[in-house]
Image 1 (cartoon, helix red, strand yellow):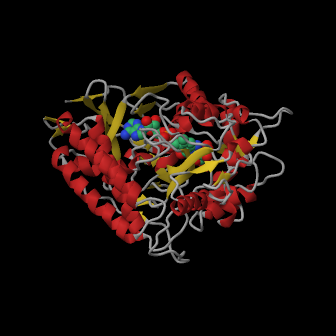
Image 2 (cartoon, rainbow, N blue to C red):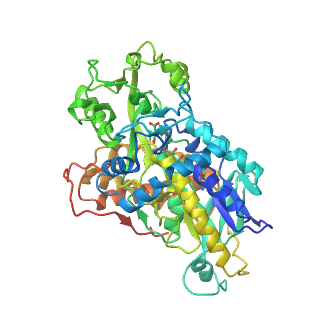
Length: 538
Ligand code: FAD
Ligand code: SIN
């Protein structure tokens, strides 16, 4: 069954993390009608769990060129230098916006702002709110959204974009030539219904895809929905092979992977091997503060060499007051049975961040007219082959500001059209009939990605992953078109799609660079460029 929303919106945003909320505030302030649809509770997002902070040049001893240099160095030759400079230059102004919205960054006793340090940064430049920066930002943004004329719908899952091309195929008369966005279908999880929404502009701010892996720092919302929707709407995916594995998450015998921020190492804590010895110096001159790809690979190597299922962070060795600087981490470790003041804590890498995504211009526009993307779902050229720590919250706020200006200009100049969109046609088989198959599929997918598309890859492993994914895709397609959709069916379908895009991207890259390391091509190829994977068949 399908239903429609009566109200018309100028901009429909999918996602209520830092990117979606920041974007919404700016466009609503300009007087446009904005709706945000989000698939779970409004605060549930990767943003909400960000710990380390947000990187920007705010101190006298730092400058833009150093931040640019560090970003380019971490990105291993694949960042777009112009984009890097443009985004980082806007950092201080967007930090001021966050302060104006009520984010109260931690400060030192003398009143100066407290700046953390993370891997790959040559200076202390990470503003933070203790070790719960993302939560503080999310709360401030939501509080401001509540004061604006923005409608926020919780528990609505964006299924697919409705494009002119698709509508014409279904016999709808759509003026003009070429393709553009007309609206989207959303699954209303509380009423088990699909909603058809018209909008001249849709912003995808759906975040990352960490849930493609068995072990991840990402919450359950991170299922790559935006990338999958864009691919089905005919857009390519860019640089998806560059999945960032965070080096330090608390080891546990189940799938729980609680992040231990890199800022801990910024305060002097060292990673130690099974003999209790620091080992990072062997791998990089910056040792424990080397870029993330280097540290994650070094840990992987040490674990394989020693046979130990983890390495340790020597937290008792920290000079400052660990519980005062990292209260959330200290508490969470205690809850899981580890007192960071008493013994070094066991850590392992886990999938963390997607450096690739939907290719966008520096104003969030995509190749599909009316479709914009912002935040982790987008690929702007800032991160290249490996994101510099704490550059993603920054990218989201800077790009939201730029994108909002572009969207307002787009809305000012558009001609209104009055098209009745085709209704969603649901199948009759309840997806719940296939619940067991879906959960098996999900498990198989996550394990294949972890085992074959992880920190160290090879062509054979990638091919293995691909053949499993093709089977899973065939299976899900067999019942998707007859099924009454529900949340788990939609998410598993998207995860299979994104995993396939990741594997295809990885197979295309015949070199090792940044986060993509393959035994078959261990060297960097100076001529290699960004990877673009065409849309998958539907
Ligand atoms: P998100 O914050 O993930 O928001 C995505 C939103 O989209 C959510 O509301 C989600 O429910 C919604 N959504 C997704 N799909 C759909 C759909 N189909 N329909 C409707 N809604 C949908 N970066 C830093 O710069 N500094 C840090 O210190 C830092 N620490 C981190 C710590 C952790 C544990 C994690 C997981 C990430 C961290 N990152 C950090 C990365 C950073 O948090 C994210 O990249 C960033 O928050 C992404 O913001 P976003 O708005 O793009 O996506
Ligand atoms: C962390 O706090 O270590 C995560 C920072 C990031 O992902 O940018």
